[in-house]
Image (cartoon, rainbow, N blue to C red; front, side):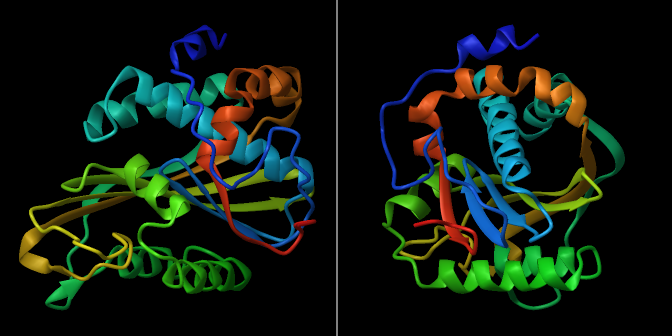
Length: 248
């Protein structure tokens, strides 16, 4: 198990972010993790917060090592194939369907908020709103947003996921919102999540998947996942947007 992880290329590029010996605490939070935006409920324990960030980062990097992230179908085939290997069990899913804008311009922020409306509880909705408030105050050339932008796409094709993370009675569950956007329009100096694309210049699709962590199995592979990621990848790819439980 996990032998494919050796093929992930190690990067020594360090961002202001979480270290492998991270001081996570329980609390509402939002993080970038490679091409994912995580929304973490206050119900999620400190250990579970680390587990979801590290395991899904590893799944992304392993899929990236197999195929470019902009090769949408092949990338998701690899990503979803890897999830059971790291103790994530799929309980429900909905295939990609077109997202049809109702206005002349559309942003990925609007796609995310619309797609999650009615899908997440009020606390996670508040976390989403807080995350975007923080993102709106970032400079597009900030290292954190620049890394997320590079990890999510190539300027013409974006492939990102929004993870809504909750824990009830020790059961850690993630609602994954999958979003793909293909465009001929350049964002120029805008943050791509906030850029208002002309609706005739974009094709957007969304899908959903709900996963639950097999905590007993994950305990047996947790250290292996931490070791395979290593501190350099963790520091590069996982960046805090906000965390009410942060010691910093």
